[in-house]
Length: 213
Ligand SMILES: C[S@@+](CC[C@H](N)C(=O)[O-])C[C@H]1O[C@@H](n2cnc3c(N)ncnc32)[C@H](O)[C@@H]1O
Image (cartoon, rainbow, N blue to C red; front, top):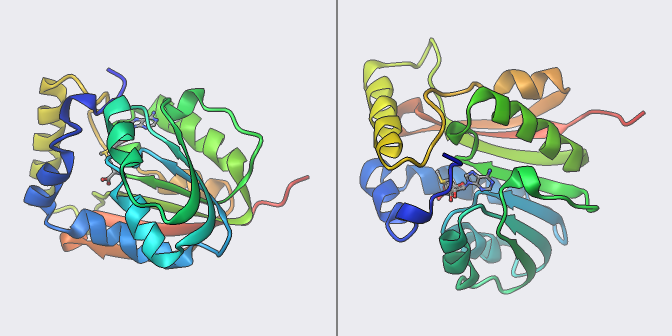
């Protein structure tokens, strides 16, 4: 199980909208205004690529985007998107196998970490952390269950989702990893945090404050 969404690529957006209406989309769209002009952007696990069209509405040119997606079918769908005059490179690899000499102004990981078991989440966090510039922004969007907002229905939806993805043999995770401690330990600052879908979806923008020695 390597979290590859090939099996449901053609249906993923419909399923997402059926269950979450446009909450998953809105949580990501709101963050896009923070992308700087002419920035270097790394998108990991962008799915069908609808986000590329939304980015193009904010910046129609000047961005250099690297789009890393483990699913070949998701890449094929993404390549059909209107990216304006932005320079997009599609990379069909798991992020774990991706190497780059570039460092990025912005890293996006929308609904990526909720697929991962803790070991992979920790490894991918360290890898992406090394790719982000000082003062660069990391757009994290994921499901959220915590003591203050963890109501039974969120737990139920989450369990059903993991059950569904296990049945299809897609997702390795059995439960949600709280990524906040990773960011806080690595000296990230929270620029913005917004909740959607009754608090079940959390969109956080972190700024990398780590000074390189
Ligand atoms: C839950 S979907 C989210 C898709 C998209 N971000 C959205 O919100 O519509 C997760 C996506 O991450 C991709 N993915 C999972 N593990 C990955 C990895 N290690 N490297 C790159 N992409 C990965 C899957 O193929 C899938 O398209």
